[in-house]
Length: 64
Image (cartoon, rainbow, N blue to C red):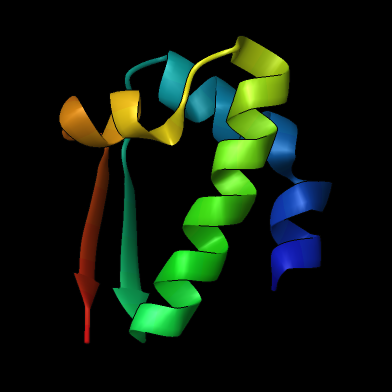
């Protein structure tokens, strides 16, 4: 799954930069892996941490 996120990294960056939202549903381990991958992509592409998008309510989670 992380390979697919990296492959489509530009899509996720553009989505978040255009005020879009991402909802993560699933296990806590998956959430941690996805967030780490997104953070890496965002830092390289925008210089912004994933925390900025989480604080803006653009990255939401429903994980267990």
